[in-house]
Length: 385
Image (tube, rainbow, N blue to C red; front, side):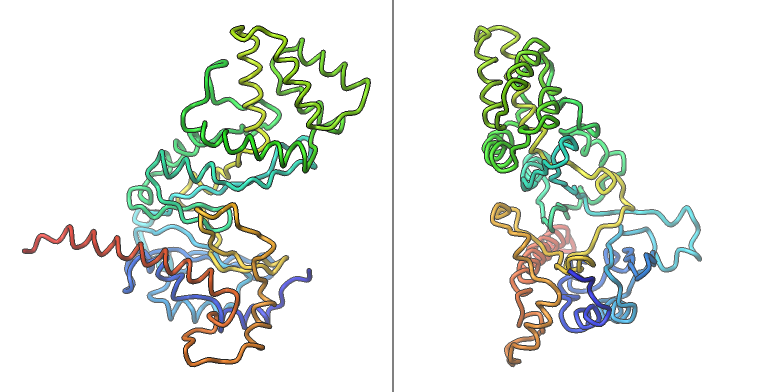
């Protein structure tokens, strides 16, 4: 698909981009406060130009600047102790990131070896871990999961790093085994629900659909994750004499495991290795840079991918399995819908006449819940009576 033209982007920003919904998402209240006017907005312009440390008094000023610059996309930064646009006149020690959404960016890429194997497993494991173990309520945009809980937003960089390290299952060096247990002991309780789900995904996606272990390269990557050299040698000998599918190779490993007595340490070690292999090939990877630093920029919802032209849309974490990336509207599609749909007095915004509407409605419902929570918190803290 050809890159999106500047003209199309200009029309999108002027007529379709949900500025008010984005403002409520960032501000948590109808009236502008420090969560908005002390927050950095960074603009990506053509020729890889990035304009950083922009900030705005209200949504109208924000929209005016976006329409003027017509960026390829813009990104959301942290809330600073003072307004980002005034940083050059602010004492250096008085300009620091104060709060930022606690977020995890989950990539679903499978092990780098073999290259053809790319898992499309939804990042539901990290969403579940975050919500059940950290007390966070996730709002997922694509594969970025962010929490707006006050305590989470105020986490320091060190605290964020500790949480990311706790959530990380697959090591950076993906040729190494998953290291989340002591020896062959059971998995941590927080990972067991994810494993139960991913075991089914592993069969359908890794063994059947992508057939990751069928090639010689894929088989060798598989063997490297088995801790018993005797089993590795036996399997390698079997596979050298005849070609076999990934499902058959997985059954061969099970057969080798059954040769050991049920209570033997060798069997326990191999059973643990099978679980680890499932996690290795299906558990989402975390983008540590996004998650550990408060000053990291995050692509804004409803921005347009410059190559595909698709909209970055919110996704309901409860329905992540139903999400189809190919069904997400493109900006050119939205412009066509706008041109072919008759105007109706009941529509307050042009995006309501397009297939963007369900996604904006989803964000608005999320925003409404946030603003109701803020109102309740304020009433609870009001002791003036």
